[in-house]
Length: 206
Image 1 (tube, helix red, strand yellow):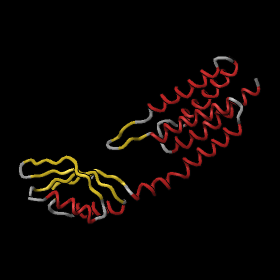
Image 2: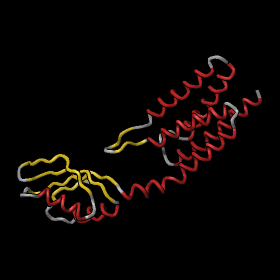
Image 3: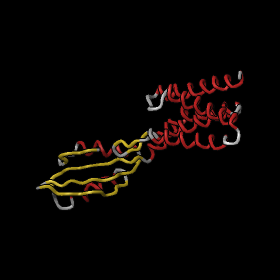
Image 4: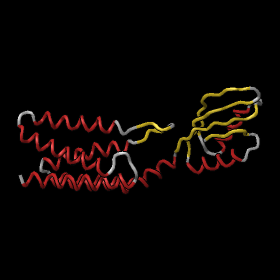
């Protein structure tokens, strides 16, 4: 009984540490949620040990249940999918709870350090990688002229970007062009600055 209580307390502390990091960054699954996931997984693992023959099935269902919970955190915002890191963290915290519930403190504590290290140290590396090839959606509205849109595609290339033409339409004497454009963050900044100062551009969304 005492050993079971120790495992639950350790699960609470681990879930609280990771949850505090998520709460600090205002994520959907924060302090209390991570504690409940970690302690809940530990409880299910403890129960599976006591039940015996059906214990493996209970442990397998923990993984499925955590997966459904994580899927509810993922959502699409404009042209980006958000919540993937938090959903993956939920899944990992469930695994930590199972480790602690099974008495595998060494694996659980090592996993906690690895997960916290990823959450604290990798965002900088992720942002650096993303800045080397960032995708943006551009929409340009301008007065219709022959080769008007071709002119802007050439402009993207001159700025060091790679444009992929999307929907284009003409309304009256105006023409609207949309592109998905890939390239370094600095190239996007240079391109945006020039387009904002282009007197022929009537509307520019980026």
